[in-house]
Image 1 (cartoon, rainbow over the protein chains, first blue to last red):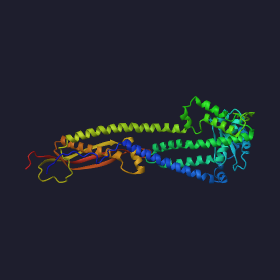
Image 2: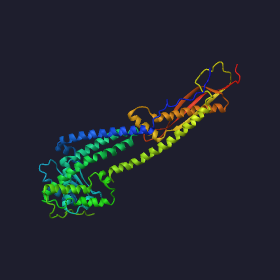
Image 3: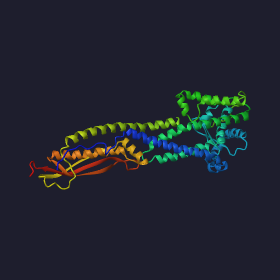
Image 4: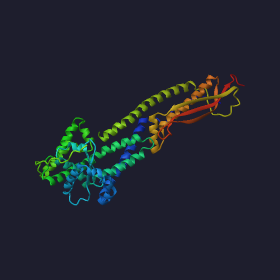
Length: 277
Length: 161
């Protein structure tokens, strides 16, 4: 019996495939599958949302912004509620019981909650110069209820969380993160058309209330200017939840011109009291 | 800050860690394979076989236990790929090279020990693999593997028969 010292053959117990190729295939495939799942869920939710009766919505989510004593005693809430009620009057037979509350946050923003609750941040109240500007912001949020976008957002968020939660086992956190980012980017176009429709709806309410749309876009112009200092060009605009503010003002003016609404008129001073601290 | 930008920044650190682990792990693997191949050529004429019975024609002067063991760490990139594999199934290729290196290194060390002790061959060679447990949030991560090669070293008579 002869012993011959043959060397081990290579590439049988191991694979020659480059690890980065495997990485790209696995990450790409999983991110793609996750985004596809989220997209299908989002489309399904879009179909289902109009079928949910507002009465049921109020029963499910009404507690999200239940009237409480502290908010009721806030003088800002009462003024905001009056303005909101005046605007909502022009949306006849709306099925919601709209309520508004002030949220203590420096970032200027307004949020439409399921069930008819609207949150307005203190940062936004500090930025608006007159009632007409505030009316467009509130009208915009009413527009979200009109399109029922607030439920779509909630449903999509829920679907995204479910899919990403399923991925985050087995070291999929990075994949889940990538899928979340891709999903957010993909959603932007969708969000932007919703925002534009909500803007047009809000503008119609403002016109119905004041008989003109003067000052309506000024708030966005001011926001755009204040952000320009820290902005990073068009990419930042694309990434933003809301459309580019300059584009938005242009769209508002175009809408007003198309409808023949007066862009000049007396501005109503803001009647929001500053809170006593 | 914008949520998408924020998510990208939050992803930056894990991705950078993956890239670092990829480069360091790949460099270590390439060097290890170079060393393994060179030493396999050097030791190829020292047989290490799995016979349990010593052939009767071999004249044996001495016997003794020889062992070779190696512990190799799993790198973060390999573990990440293996983690994704647990979602979809298939060959965990990133661990195949790791274990291939460990087995060959253990056999080489076994042969090196046999040579150092004056043995001419190793018979009844066996391999054992042990997972070294590491710490993770779930408490069951693999820090690395140990492969142990052991067998019986034989000192053969110069002029048998």
